[in-house]
Length: 427
Ligand code: SDX
Image (tube, rainbow, N blue to C red; front, top):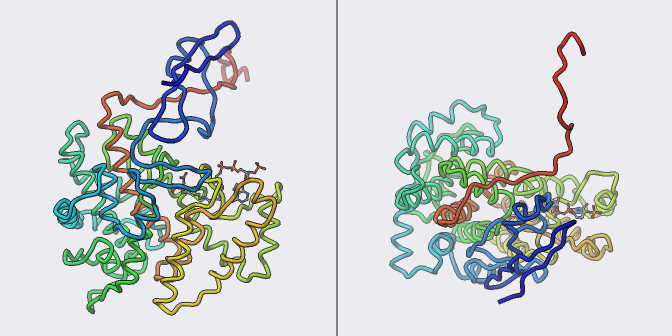
């Protein structure tokens, strides 16, 4: 048991319990702080605030450690599969073979979407950004699957979770097909989760599509790297939306919208665009200088992280995956050399060293996704596809917590104090 945290504010002092998790920083339980002091704590951006307790994912930002239910990301990426990681995040333990087979059977049989949802797509412009389509289509799922929106029913919560995990690849592939004017392909239940997605994305009705096992394995590993990541902005959005009792489809649509931002999941698209704009190693110093210039809003996309003040362990695996895919596809993309040299120069530059800015999961992901054949605009949709597993697991964890309450932060008010209305003819 840890001693209480003692505090003193003008005219008041008191103590608050310090709570200890299984690993990582302790927390001061300040839930009674406002009632006791009439003051709020202040933490825009939540740099020092724990919003919940969770058993899903642990990150040690200083050491570059990422655990899912205690298992290191490097071991999961090397030895597990995305479906097994999905099971682990949803059910707390690694599955037995029978449990995994049953889980995959269930997910596989939820991969089709309602035929009316396909019609829904026709309303979008062909050049709509895939993330705009994902926001719309996933939000629209609550208009189709009414039988799994009662969040008080654990059975319905699990069906909704399975539907979301299963249908995200179908919806993402449909968004891509729609953008290039090709017909949608129905899922093929004989294929793996990731193989099915590859076929729906790159296959055409006119010919048989052979899934390349090397690409299938690489993409499955990329999905594992994106599955969950503690209380990041989009996961916190899903939790906040869910805390009001909103249905799971609406909550995930909110998470997709938040992930789209370039400071978050949109960084993979922005990072590859940046690497292509730099173009050659000779131009790297110009961009490093811009990133360091306070008067220039430019930032190195794919660099830096709120939590990791060391190398993002996912970036390590991602870089290895680039090499694997390049070798398998006999691809040579100068943008990879630019990325490697940019990393090398930045990690030896005082600015980045002092601010502990390292490559994050988004720095290399675009290079490998582009080599596989995805257009840049699809990168964040792939991030959303994979992160849906974490979002639904975090949402289930929150909703099944009997102590769960609606999230409702307060503020430091800086607007006008009370004043009387002035009639129009007096202004
Ligand atoms: C993801 O939270 C998660 O877990 C997210 C994620 C997940 O899996 O869910 O890991 C996925 O979103 C990864 C991050 C992807 N975003 C980018 O790569 C965009 C570029 N990076 C950033 O804009 C920034 O690093 C953030 C948003 C990721 C983190 O921002 P913070 O923690 O709020 O840090 P900050 O903006 O306060 O920066 C601290 C300092 C600042 O300089 P000073 O004001 O102290 O002088 O570092 C500088 C920043 O200017 N800085 C950068 C920089 N990132 C931070 N300078 C140049 N290039 C950068 N990329």
